[in-house]
View 1: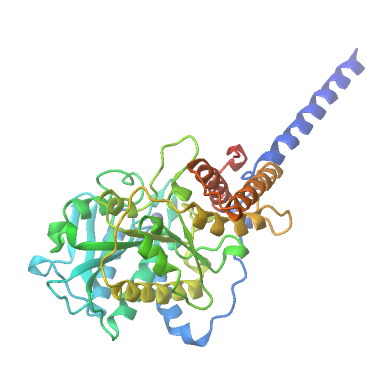
View 2 (view 1 turned 45 degrees about the vertical axis):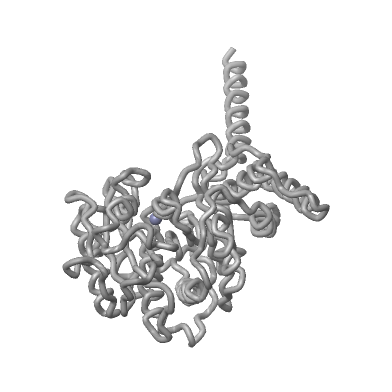
Length: 431
Ligand SMILES: [Zn+2]
């Protein structure tokens, strides 16, 4: 009697443990503990960019310091970040197009301000290019402080240093450039009218510009993180497919040591089971049919965690990104006519060319994205086969359809899910 009970007990535990282990094997996310997170090996910094690297680091160290307590909209730390940006604008001898020498735009009294300034000299008759990044972050939650080094002190630092590079001669020939720090991009304001970028566009007159004068916006978010060696020198240039000539310019600009990978905006927004979800301040410009480019090195496992701290960023890549962006602005300035925006345009072929080599690597057991479960690895292999079918289709001159585009975005979302350690990625469907 007693023996039987023990036996039943063993069987119960044996089954429970076996099934649990099997279930855990499918989970991508479960095993990661922030303490296990280590920095990838970063190559040494070449002497030509040492100064730039140093300046970027100073910006990030200040903005992501415990002093600013995570820069949450409406907090004293957010105000300190605003002040830092204004001081830097003045140090860079940037000017302002707004009446009464204003460089701030109040989003709301509870939230605080957007800040802006322009490259000098401002030519009153010229059209405008906008360079922007949000400077707010999450602040303090449940006793943890989220310092937000990658999100988004990294981009603010690049914004300031790109402005410095562009202030140097030769000056631009066709455009003025407005440099903007947005407030309130983070929850609870994201995708609401109270997002700093939405207020900026809605009340653009306060900056001294008219909406119709803005001919392109470059928005940066998450520009310093490293998650996986094959992408450690990469930045994604997203959304240029809506502006063919911008796409063309992108292909021509190079900075040694930096890989700029173009990607369609649908490749980051088409989260299965949700409406296309805008992820940053570029949305405000797109909604007004302004050509835009969204630059990001993507989410890492530190995304919206207290482990997003300044010593983890890839400053050499950030320096190269600033150099690259200054070149891009000069190249756009040299175009004979303004850029045009085609909201429905896609470039699935370009998406495929960017995605295939990355998926190929993610689908190999050796060198896979850390924490990829066997289910996700299996699904990556199915994605890879699907992408190979699309490659074959392209080789036989059959153009890619919207259905093919959806399959591409599924593979892309799986990739981002695993890179960002966003939870049960193994649940994402396959093409
Ligand atoms: Zn952000």
